[in-house]
Amino acid sequence: MRKIELSKRLKSFPPYLFAEIDRQKEILKKKKIDFVDVSIGDPDVPAPQAVIEALYRAAKLKDNQKYALDQGKALFRKSIQRWFKKRFSVSLDENKHILPLIGSKEGLIHFPLAFVNSSDYIIVPSPAYPGYKSAARFVSARIYELPLLEKNSFLPELSKIPQRVKNKAKLIYLNYPNNPTTAVAPLSFLKEAVSFCSKYGIILAYDNAYSEIYFSQKPHSILEVKGAEEIAIEFHSLSKTFCMTGFRVGWACGNSDLIRALLKVKSNIDSGLFGAIQEAAALALDRQEKYVVGLRKIIKERRDLFVAGLKNIGFKNIHSDSTFYVWMRIPKGFKSSIDYSKYLISEKNIVATPGLGFGKYAEGFIRFALTVDKKKLAEVLKKLNG
Ligand SMILES: Cc1ncc(COP(=O)(O)O)c(C=O)c1O
Image: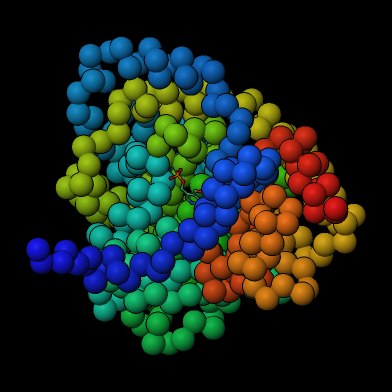
């Protein structure tokens, strides 16, 4: 039989970086060795009970058992509109500016299909959520890795992007609160980003998945910035805010042409978001403000305990300003983040994420997720100190 070849597109995806870590995890499991997994950004806290009940009720309705209309339910879009107005003082038209998504990843990755050709650049921060690079590879775009350096508080220097890239860039992804560096962007940077994109005619895709997971500096929406309505689309998620990762629900909002184009892509790919999930998500946005306050408190307590513990042990360059991650420079003596993470698994029975998985400028760092309870985090500290 003729060999079935992968497409050039799929071949351009790098080998699965975490395969070796997964293999080592399997070895620990087989040997029945107890290990702590702080590698995954999937919260251990249950979703709000009222949301689960709303989902159950709504699933029984006949209307929700049919294909969902492509732009989503008006009820959900109106909840998003109210939530956005209250949270960011930004007024959105629920018919023109809002599009429900099957999780924000789905929208972030499908978005370039609407605008980007293979000769175009997509500017991707480094480190960054790996989805942006995948999105660029799916449309065979050229990728420019924009460094987010520790010495610049993990904000990019837009003025240093080469002219050839600026001229051929169609899209830039930015993400604050940032995974994995945990940096929060001040409004002054968001203004700079909007004027940069306006000047060069670059679409700004702003990933705000962690907008509610902060400790002191309250994150902004890019849509608060004057001029952003011309060039920006912002992505939100209920995954982190309400611990609803498995529900797969989020939304895109912003410029009406960008929203319409994403809807055109999506209506050729999916058939909408389960109506019952939209109803449950609407209830979360309308009535679960207290839940989010409680979640922030839980994450902050974990963060305070874990960061203080790391400092006591003697680790340096520890960052945890938002999200539920701790981003830390690997100790001296280790060749790479992969090396250090292998050492943590085999010698300390701790699974953490090596920086390299987030881009070349992430080398030399490791990410811990605060998605286990304080007892487990204390255990990690004890192992690290042992
Ligand atoms: C920065 C960032 N954006 C987007 C996502 C995707 O979230 P979801 O598809 O669950 O909404 C994640 C998930 O970890 C993330 O870290």
